[in-house]
Amino acid sequence: MVNFFEHQQQARRNTGLLVILFFLAFALIIAAVTLVAAFVIGAVGTNGQGDYQLSWEPFIWVSTIVGGGILLVMLFKWLQLKAGGKVVAEHLGGTLVSPDTQDAVERRVMNVVEEMAIAANMPVPAVYILPNESSINAFAAGYDSRDAVIGLTRGAIDSFSREQLQGVVAHEFSHILNGDMRLNIRLIAALAGILAVAHLGRILLYSGHASRGRNNKNALPLFGLGLIILGGIGILFGNLIKSAVSRQREFLADAAAVQFTRNPEGLSGALKQIGAREHGSRVQHKNADEAAHLFFGEALSHWFGMMATHPPLAKRIKRIEPHWNGHYPEPRTARSRSEKDHVKAQPKPSALNKLALLALPSVLMEQAHSPRQAPKLVHDIVLSQLLDEPNKALKDLAPAQQLALVEVAVPALRQASEADRLNLLKDLETMANSQDLFHWGLYQLLARQLLPKARFKETLDNDQALQVTVEALQRTDAGQKVDRQALCLALNTCRGWSPKAKQTLIDNWLTTVRADDVISPAERQLLAILCACIEVPLPDEMLQ
Image (tube, rainbow, N blue to C red; front, side, top):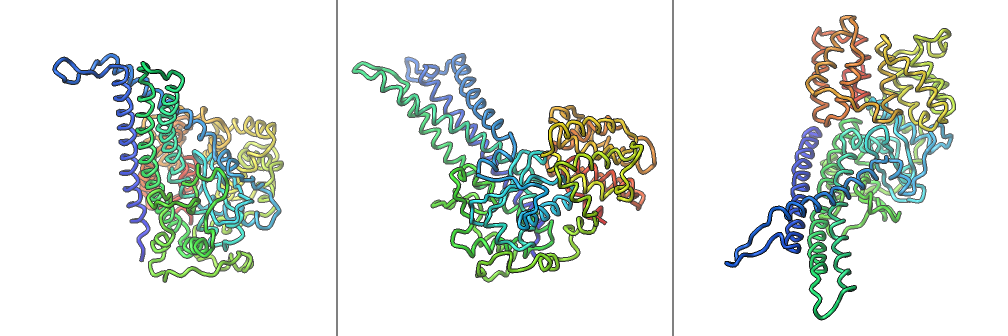
């Protein structure tokens, strides 16, 4: 049997080594540019014996200007990309799928994305479709879960079966949960800084044309040529390493998707459908090259294999399905099977059945999908203990059902009118000091999705954050009061941790709730809220 956990560990190790190599190469490029500039301005010269001498004061000024200039370019690019996945999706020609869409194909896609989000214990991301792309592909974009989007080409949603669509969406969710989007933004920003070196060199090289003459001793064109060469070398090796990082993250996302869905055939079947088509996963949009590393499959053709942003298709399939015979199936459309057949074919038991097992009333699901009705629904769920006349339709909902409805409603809340959204947030602030810990947690989850990030910048040190969350679980089990303000700061802290650090945190939480061999309903509810607020899937044993 394939050890997908081992594949994930290997991909993480390889990624770490490549990222270190990337930034080492980046530092060397800056050092080389600084040295060339120092020669031009005379900071490096020779003495009477022909030995090189370095004048430290001008050298420090040069290194500060060069490093500062590159960092400014990187910062500008980073801020540009940090605007959110919505910007990337629209840049690729994507159209937003309304959460209350009545189109059968779009509804099917939204249902699968909602299933994945609930199974992952996170708010439902926005979904975009690239209507003019007939090839099979998908992508995840954004800086974190609050601005993440899932995108699918028209060819993908018309071709995949339900289980294949689940496998691909799970692959994209793993990019969100593993922090790949944040890593991609940082690598792109670093490459933009190196590209700026080459652009500056081109400007300086052509500046010599304006001052050509027999006795012209202008050294700027020569300096410009040096920058072009150094920048070109930096861009080449930077792209090589970035592509290698991207390939490792694709292996990691494949392994994580299989672990998540418990259905290797879904993901391998999706990859086979790409191989079965003439144009495979090629994306035709003019901006595809800027986002090639974000896609599920290779979006561009590469004559040089080391520049490929994805591993070879056959190699990915073999990792998932070692006994594959190498033959691709005949291309087919998803409509060759009915939706009932798709659902019936879903492997059981599966974490993906969580949404179905919750048996949420269809009327409430319709309200959660509606930008007009979702604010009132969420208002009534979170403030249910404070209302004089509670919503009767919500009276018998279990906490797990309430959490799922809130997570499903997030896309509709983002599309609600500004007045409705602001009124909702104003009303929900009454929960900030509530003693009802579960509904306080729902407020925290919504606030982190809808309010500006600046509201959650205050943090604790890491050890203190761990202690506060563990103590909250202990006090909840004992029926004691929990310090809400400290817990809020702890969540701010833990949300920014790496996936590996978050996994260690979850292990500590599980050890805490298992201490008396019984996981109480209150502990289960708080653990679900804590996991959702720091953007990690709920542990399997909590899904019971």
